[in-house]
Amino acid sequence: MIRSLPCSRLYITGYRLYITLFYIFLIMPLVTICVLAFNDSNYIALPWEGFSLDWFFANTNERLGLFKDVDLLLSIWVSFKTGFFVALFSTIVGTMAALLFEEEKFRLKGLLYFLALSPLVIPGVILGISILLSSTNAGLFMEDSFGLDIEFLRPSFWLVVIGQFSFGSTYVMLLVSARLKKFDRTLEEAALSLRATRLQVIWLITLPFLRPAIIGAFIVAFLISFANFNTTIFLVGSDPTLPVDLYSRIKFSSTPVLNAVSFMIVAFITLAASISFFLNRKNG
Amino acid sequence: MMKKPRGTFYLLITPVLLWLLALIVIPHMDLMYRSLRFETDDGLWVFSLNNYLAFFEDQIYWLTFVKTALYSIFVTILAFVVTFPVAFFLTKVIGKKYSSFMTLLLLIPIWIGELVTVYGWMILLRDNGVINSFLMKLRLIDAPIEMLFTNFSMTIGLLYISMLFMIVPMMSALDSMDDSLIEAASDLGASKWTIFRQIVIPYTTPGIVSGGIIVFMLVIGDYVAPNILGGKSSLWFTEQIYNKFLASFNWNEGAAFGFLLLLLSSFIVWVALKLSGQKLDKVGS
Image (cartoon, rainbow over all chains, first blue to last red; front, side):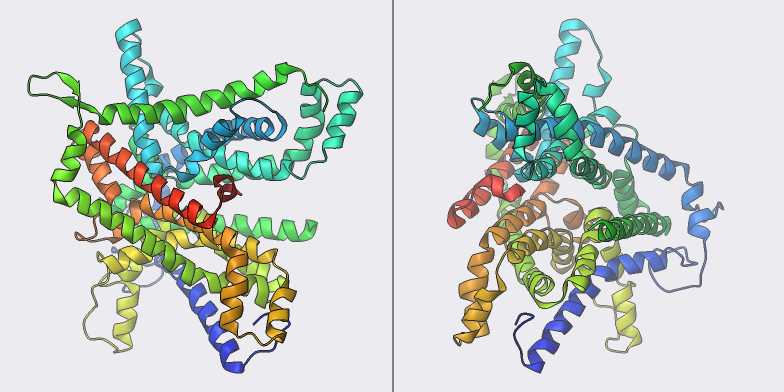
């Protein structure tokens, strides 16, 4: 059953077979996309018509490759920008929240902590519509009372950033808190007793200790933002992010350029995961 | 405890309060308020329960609602059944060297994102898709089996996008479990099933519950998999909300529907936490 216990041959073979099937199930859609990205065909699926790079580089009437498709490139760029700002703001506020909940004592702490965790159990759709409602209300209010037209309160790039930030901070907070729990508090006490101010202690001692977790949280927030669809769809303005663009293409106009974009994403994530794997092994 | 200057406290709490009030509390109050507003025939806005009435009057809405709830529970259980042996295998059966590599493989589909993986399944399951072509080449079937746009394809999609979130918490629970517990039980003559039911499962319950809640939330709140892989018969409740907001622009009814979905998911999560005696803060970790 476990490493140290002997087992019947049938049991072991059966178990291994199941695990193999599971991994085939896991990898099948990814491999399919990657292979079909190089198919010399005008249809997204089989049959295989031979190898071609058309869906990356072609610019003909029939085929518009990924690197020639201005709309697609633009949505990728929008997603990168969104991801960057979401990661930046989430990292700052999420880290502050982690410090607040781990180190400070105050009234209503339990309630606030519950609220900070709540995005984990609120469906993304609900966050999307409620932020849309609120920002629309606020926008109308600003216009009626002050005659101001504030762009980020309408569906737009910045509203998407705000919406994704609302749950991005929760993930950052959890990741940073996990590391903060391992922090040796006597280091802070020592610095405080040597007359460092609280802010100096955080800046010079706590934050450097948290740095790996903060960098990791930044990357996680970026990736969460990059892949988000459920919340984004309600808040998106005239410039779609990549998932929104992909969705409308899958629904209404699928060409194999979708395979090419998906291939790029799969390749990029796999590469990044492998790098982090080898770095971890070297350090650990 | 040393007395701390309060300045830092205010510096930390201000942005956090802003985040929680402006983006969590007020929007959800707006959602509730909006769901209770109704425009009468005279063009007056009044408080009423009419938006909720629309939900109960039209059969398709509450049928979809019930179906979404039951289906999400079903997919969550399915995710547990499918992934538990994998989590056990990676933590207890094979060596560390292979285990860390195989765990890494599990994380890749998560980061790739559901749109790409759901799209991959669409290509696999189409009539002229990979699976059908393959089966026809092997002459196992003569005509393509209709797999896409059915409840089957939707279930596969929902399972695929959510199940990996269950493995990670289960693995960390299993990791902290001492192997000697299993060895001792085995020495005393317990069967595999007894060990599994009486030792492994109780020990892993916290991981199963947090993983289960995450899976359930992902499934019940998902739109992409039911919409792209599901057929006409596999309506998902989120699709109704999308339609209210983005197609028919009836935001008030949409708000009511959203609020109902929020109540439903919170209720089921609450029941799961109560039944297992856990707290919400454990789900996050």
